[in-house]
Structure formats: structure tokens, C-alpha cells
Length: 191
Image (cartoon, rainbow, N blue to C red; front, side, top):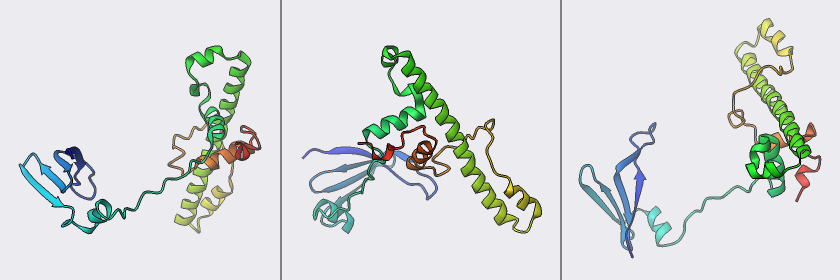
């Protein structure tokens, strides 16, 4: 069995997550070799003498495999969702050139509506977070209580915060786009 060399990360401390270009990890049929090229030191760990984690995975085959999340959308749903979010950018230039001008205009209109709805949704989520923070920080302030009564969004304010940072999932966004009829009503039932 040949050696496979894989550079492995070394963690300098808990806050840093940097690669050590001088560290090499190799594995063969007998064990694992860790080489530190910068200080010319090597460590060999036999599979049967090593820690239980390596033994469980390599010899006993009792590895805990990572669970993958199922995709939120099927192929058709993903295509509609992506078109709404990114418009004509989802198509190759050649595809756009072959499209009917009416279809191009329809995709652009859907994308523009989706952009406005997404920005409004981001404002709503941001406002809820700010309202919660202010009410917790100043629970007895009449000014804050008055501010909390003001609701709504402003189309001239663009929220630069990403959907991920606001913890808005694709399914939450899709529900909002269905609510405003940007995506079809049967979006979640499409196959």
C-alpha cells in the first residue's frame, strides 16, 4: 500500500485555525506518521497501539458518519427559487440570447419584485431584533416604548446584512415569496 501525504491543520491556540505548511500526515497499512518538517521531528502512531478513536474508525469500522441534510428544495423548486433571487444571472449568455423577449422581461420583473420583498423581509427581521434589544436594554423608557410602536419598512433603506446573518433560511424566504405571489402557490408541492 502506497503512502498518501495530506497536509493537516495544526491549531496554534483555540482562537487561531491556521494551516502549518511544515506538518505532513501520512498513512500506511501499519499506522499514521506525522512529520514536522521545520523541526525535523516525526511521530508514528500504530493503529493497534493508538488511541481508541483511530482504532474504532480504521480497524473496527465503527465510525460515526456525518449526517447530511436533505436539500430544502427539489430541482424544479430550486430553479424557480434561484431565478427569483438572481434573475437572468442563472442562465448562460447563449440561453438568454435565445429566449423570447417577453420571457426575459417576465424573469426580470419577478427578480425585481423578489429583491424588494427580500429587502423588506430583511428590514422586518432586523427591526424585530433591534426592538427586542432596545426593550431588554431600556424596559422602562417611554421613548423606547414609543419607538416600538412604529412598524413598517422603508423601500429606500437597503439592508446590507446577509440572509444567513439574519438567520433567514431558504424555506422562510420561499414562504415569504409565495405569500407575495412571486413564487407559485403550490411551490412546496412541486415535483
